[in-house]
Length: 100
Image (cartoon, rainbow, N blue to C red; front, side, top):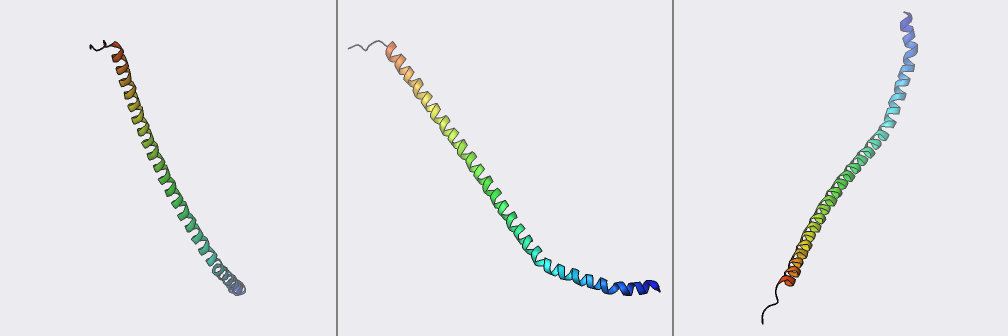
């Protein structure tokens, strides 16, 4: 019998605490929703930045490869011209003068 009496005494306090907790949950819900919305926006912004970063790195690497290919092509062309010039210079000096 004592336990029933003890429960009756505590019951109003429990109900009051439940009401306080429910009220706090109602007040916190919009804040939690706003925080979740902000978190989602931040996550989206981070993903967009990561995507843009990856795109820029890819474009930079492509431009670097293209520049290296152009430089290599020009170097080969210059070396070919220099070799041809050496042939002409060496050949012109070693050939006898044409007969007239």
